[in-house]
Length: 444
Image (cartoon, rainbow, N blue to C red; front, side, top):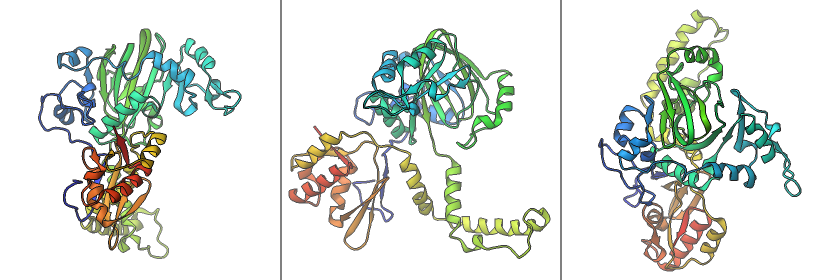
């Protein structure tokens, strides 16, 4: 762990996700973000975190009623994350552009041009959401899908980041506002796990078993539309009416559809992009290019489309691959995966103006902490140097700064004058750079 002895492969902190506890039925843990609230996962499920991990995570749907949360002593309801007034604000005052809004009617997407256009003088970009056009579509029964709320709506920016740190995967957030009696999308499946949090109104959900268990992102439901339709016509695995404060967990691949009942319905969908074993396969495939036996060509005239001709060469290739796989260093696989997985995790927001002012005025009493959710790795980089690897760049630093960097990034907030191995002057220089590089943030 950062702050302890350096490891030969370097110190790696991918957002510092806390581990899921190994005790079923344990009391609520404090949120590691320091808010004093229960962990974000415990706002999504009422069972113990260990039970959820063992019985439901990636395995089976889980329905949680608002009363279950109340019985467990948890906060109920989700309108602190987003409510209908918040939806109106996003649609009318935030200058949303098309990627952040989709509109669906009768199971199909409405063309973007029907609800976007120029924002007027000084904002002529033609893909801005036009509230009067949204009004007409919504009044006609269309579902409004606000996308990417983990980037645009502050309560959800914070909640998604904390949940992602806890689960160890990126979390995206969409909101679905559906008029009474209407549905937004036909039966389908997602290629990522989801939590559905019912905010307002009621919505009837029908859930069916997968037609393709654990689909990858490239295996979207549209290519299996007939199978999906046939399965949806059969018996469901779960039918439930979600009311405010209810939550539903669905592993990727489970078919689902929903219809608003009696009044408008607003729910949040948290998309959980958890890593898969296929990620390891892709990393191994990249490394396999370095193995000479697997780069070898075939004899002249070989017809690869003839199974009889191919068979002995396929067997030899499989043998070579098996032998090579037995020698693969896990550290090399981890190194190859790092860039992809770090890039998928956006660190917590900073305030650029305040950050710049903090860098300009830093002194021995300045208090700083690592940027929330930042992925980093500190490794040797030649004689007298260390490299601080970040998702999009690498900082070259003197080796004597390593203990101070670990202290600043690997623990609670620290004052510049308390950084180990540096005097105050050198600490100011280091922290000024870390502030300007958005690696640490100023603390009150």
